[in-house]
Image 1 (cartoon, rainbow, N blue to C red):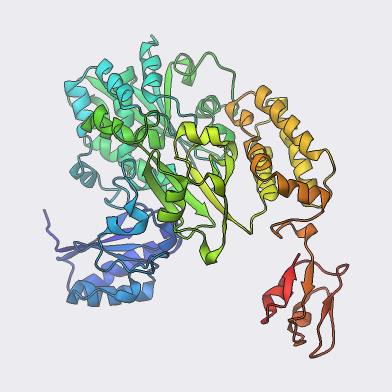
Image 2: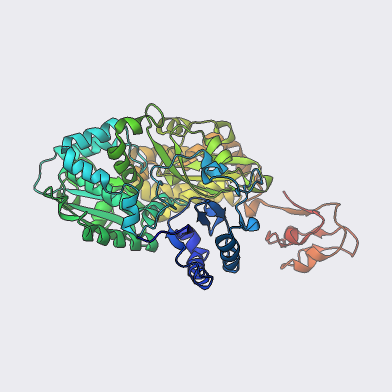
Length: 598
């Protein structure tokens, strides 16, 4: 085995790949060879490091120097200075947004973004080459599968998952071990294990990053689940819009088969397990378990009523156990370290950790894994670095279209299943979108309802028609045409849809509207009664005005596409509201801060 004195880890996740990390890898290999370091330094393409905002990310080991926003023109300097001479390139070292400190002398785990995290599901992401099974094996990979097959009965495996307290990370939070037990108790000649990697929430990329950075963790867990419930086949349902994840899954499955870790007679125990990939077309409704299974079968992705539940009658009308990617990513570690180890992390009813895709108006956009019970404030400020440009925090959306928007007064809410539901939101799959003072909460509700209307499968009337009526009302309100009684209509429609829609996605479709009405009702009332958007966001309710700060330089008049600005040179100008297109070009051009939005 080759021994290298240094390793250059380059993020190969979707975010950094889109910023050109593949070119960086190519250049690093080229320059390392040119400087005669090919036998001393190895370049490794990893999965996501988590801190997407700083990408493309490059980490040099063994010293752990974290380089951020690396460009092709920086590669030679890193090779010639750091790798050849041992001198860190200080101007490329990551600088923390909040403290303005570089990590030159800090370990990775001491950086604010990582300090509060506890990585279990993400333990190998950014650490190993996801396309090299030997690196996964070096991180105790497939030891849990070996332990389960050679030293544990099927009942013992299920009991360990039950005792761990692991709950489904796909949104509902149903006890994972209970779901496995139901499938185990179903008697049939054929059973299936399935993985929901559809991940349709706007702003969510947790499952994608796990599959890109550590695909074997999911494969190993599905094999363990197959053994536990008595299934010989498994299906991973992943959206086709995740090409990197799909590629790495295919590579990982092939490698596992070649190593005898998938297929027939695994570890010579007589246990057979075969794994297949099915690509989805990106329909949000296929995140619902029955719709997902219909799609795998080649049918239209529509939900069906339950019972019977999938554990009794699922894929191809056989007992099926379905979990999402993040849930599976915890399984091998539970089997390896024991239920008590996992049970000690988190809160009384919400065990372990949770991965969040932190996005929106936040400094440290990226992937975060924190213990259950960590407060929203810790995630948003200590890990996320707060809102950029000194803007005031306004709300955070958790749970995607099925969740809700929580205000500043609830920032100290612990992040777990029970507390988020009590606050008017939900855990969901793990999207966490931060909003600042410039966000209009009525328009946020309209955005999510527009998404739901577009993604509804249309099978049931409450979802198909009810959400459309809600969207029409919300659109009227943001257009400045809201009427007295619109709020009451939204509440009535929301309650009706919640109580009568066919599936969980339809039943939670109105949550963003209900939560914004609960915490930001004054914004709805301002839109309807005063024809005013307090956030100065809704275009039809905006008015641009020129104040007495105007110097009469005419710069604003020259860029106005509608000719709405008039005035003499060196005199205060004015805007004709009838001509104004509300494009904002004048405000951007003004150097004196003389133009305001009202």
